[in-house]
Image (cartoon, rainbow, N blue to C red; front, side, top):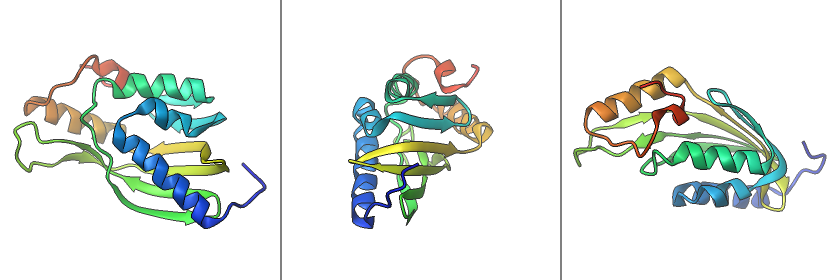
Length: 153
């Protein structure tokens, strides 16, 4: 954690860049927004330390689900910390308006220079697995192995 408290507008701008990178689906770029020594705590998949480890894991995890979206319901900035609620959303495989989503709380710690030094994702893996399995049962297509998502098929 940095002793420097960065200006709120800088933290907000870095947060919006972080969200835009995720929305673009360019997970390598998303990972590059983490500091070289960043710690990413992903309660279901483990703790990754360092940008290279984060990049390897996020690219692997997102490969089977490139269609996922992560709309942010709300966010709060407190000093260098941003806490936000991104829904984990799958599109309706039938083209309708059926909702396939589960919630997540993410905590970021800003390190300056547009980078994050810590990320923690908190969600219920059982709920996530239930959503994914229902989505597949309804016609959704995974592009690869469910195991990389921590789901046994």
